[in-house]
Image (cartoon, rainbow, N blue to C red):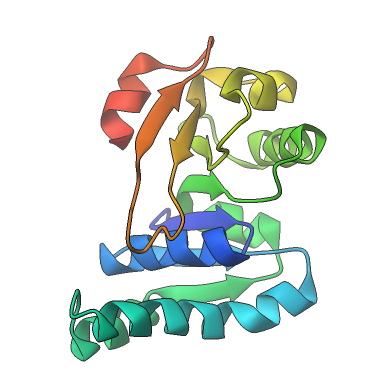
Length: 168
């Protein structure tokens, strides 16, 4: 069942984006290839939610509820089987992002959107190695994403404008 937001990359931005997804009552899978990053992800998410509680932006109950929606994964294949949308949050390196998008494009059905949290690269370039660039968009979050959620959705040369409207 595709009921999860898969965040590919569980560093600072990925964990904050995962918080946003969980606070919106979405299952959020935080995937990372680096074991050390995965080990710190739950603590990072918890700290993000605690900050929101400390700022009186959410209640402790909302934070506890959001934590129930968070999971950590080291298996991209099984994570992709559950994903209804993917948000990539890896380093600002075009080749790395292209490789991630190529892998995701191969693993996911065409109906699952693949979004990048890039702040400076073109989604057209990131999606260059995909077979289905129409399902790719930039979903630009600001740092900290828990305080300033999704800033903009950007379409590429081959992105579906209809998809962009649905994602907002």
